[in-house]
Amino acid sequence: MPDYRYLLSEREIPKFWYNVAPDLPAPMPPPLHPGTLQPAGPKDLEAIFPYALIEQEMTAAQNIPIPEPVLDVLRLWRPTPLHRAMRLEKALGTPAKIFFKNESVSPAGSHKPNTAIAQAYYNKAAGVKRLTTETGAGQWGSALALACNVFGMECMVYMVKCSFYQKPHRRTMMECWGAKCVPSPSDLTQAGRKVLAEDPETPGSLGIAISEAVEDAALHQDTNYSLGSVLNHVLLHQTVIGEEAIAQMKLAGASPDIIIGCCGGGSNFAGLAFPFVPEKAAGKNLRLIAVEPAACPTMTKGIYAYDFGDKSGMTPLLKMDTLGHDFVPPGIHAGGLRYHGMAPLVSLLHREGVIEAVSYPQLKCFEAALTFARAEGLIVAPETSHAICCVVDEALKAKEEGKEKTILFNLSGHGHFDMAAYEKYFAGELSDYEYPEAKIREALAHLPKAS
Ligand SMILES: Cc1ncc(COP(=O)(O)O)c(C=O)c1O
Image 1: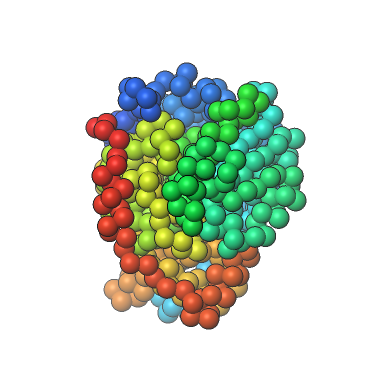
Image 2: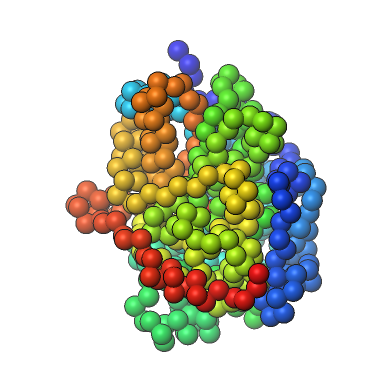
């Protein structure tokens, strides 16, 4: 009988992050300064990021050493287990082997602390006293609250309004670690007040919350901004997931044919998938599938263009798959997937055909999450349910074709704070949103004029 779990010891935690930049099939277009639309250099980022992170954002080095104090905190829950979902395989009657990395075992309940710890460490080392950030579902805000607490820093979180009210206990969790959390848009910033004046009933969006957090950081000398996804350095910090998975798949005597992750800003998918890119580049028949919500179809319906990372146009412009920076996605329960853009690294690999993208509506995702919970016992976050939906589809396809595929996915977070969403699903109160075509067309018409 094969094992259910494949474990590494604390000593086997990866000592380097894997940087995909040298393995890209095409050059990365540089970020542009929001005012001049010229390539942005390190100086342009110094107002909100410490130098060490700016360096990681731009480096072409393949392996970046993980500082010892960061490793010492990551060891509290890493290496995370690799599970074989044999009971799900049985429930689906599939010949496919299904494996997953369980990132929900971190103190905050998701993959997000992998980068939060590193970012807080580098900011603390640079003398920064306070960090601001945005959060969608609250997973990232909790992760940064945890990290700031570890390194003795203040933390201010702007939480997307619809999620703030859907998940009140996420805020309490952040407060347990000493952070402050307010619903966004708020009246604390000019960006927030402007949106509230235009639309007092707005559900908020990650783009709006980012504007508020960036403005707060730019106006306070002792404060930096911290982003939970999208940027190169954030994706870099998540690669410990894939590096561990490579070692654990070897322990299991298996090798993935398909790797699946849900995609908000792209860091969770990239964290698992990027360390496998060299294998694929060397000719292995390996599919890398990024899964997004049908209500916010950044890769499947967006365009590849320069756009702002936030609603107000304060961040540098990034070349990415985007739905337009002022697109406000419907208030689906996968709050962490409601972002108008996609990480430039994920976008480039998508455009170059290295990775595939698919989208699913939320009801089908909840259905898949329940199939998983009833087979494997774990109740996942609505974001993660998107990955599971794709896993189920691929496993059933393998059954139809009678093929023994090996599937690996990232269980990016647990759903213990998402009971209201499951409750609504059981009560039949959740619906799928129409593909918001008109709103996307309107938002795309407002893209900045940079090619
Ligand atoms: C549980 C969970 N999974 C996935 C995501 C998507 O994250 P990423 O931006 O890394 O794609 C989030 C974002 O908040 C999340 O909370």
